[in-house]
Image 1: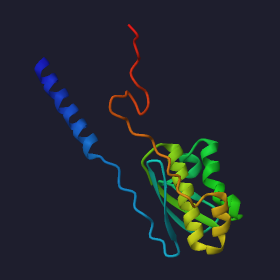
Image 2: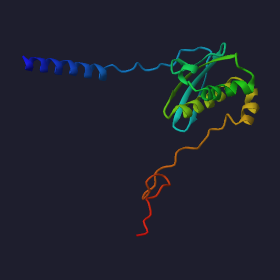
Image 3: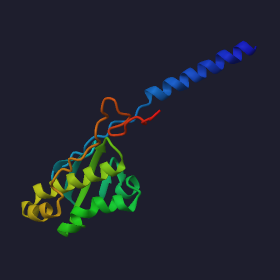
Length: 161
């Protein structure tokens, strides 16, 4: 009887394990938008695909509202900067798909993508966005680990004796 319980629990755990592995997230598909302007933004290891379309100022990131995806106020402020500089807060809706890196890098990537999309949509905004530094890709990335060191610059502890 104890063996029957063991085999039953093993079978149920196997089923649960296979259900977990087979139940993958559905891939996020870009919306089919007729009047959308597309741009790609990058920051650190993050890449954002941004779709800009006429609307009321809604920003959706990876299927969630931007305030829900980027919970910190600083990150929400970073995303809103291109609209604040150009006075277009309620003129456009944004749908962004971002992957890679952490939240800070993702927010920077979305900001870069929004700026590039605004510049594509309204070329006269280029001077304003360029002066604010939003069209330049921030090329700073993590320095690689070097041979003989613990990290990029951290060496092993020196022992005099």
